[in-house]
Figure 1 (cartoon, one colour):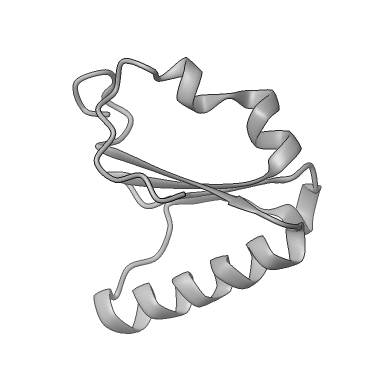
Figure 2: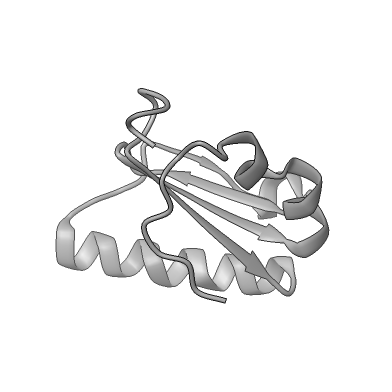
Length: 91
């Protein structure tokens, strides 16, 4: 992403089955990053607060996006940032 924008070096995009699964992934990730790396997110768009099928956690150089399938297709970040290099894609 750093060649396309100054807001982050990496975007991590993931699709979840439901908001409960996204919140569970978020909670586990936060716990692991706080324990192992002493790192907390700079900003969070939390599904529990607003709903909408999109969880965003900004860790500075890395921004995590977890979407429900419909929301991921709606916002189409892959299309919006199609010129960015894909580092790893897991299907």
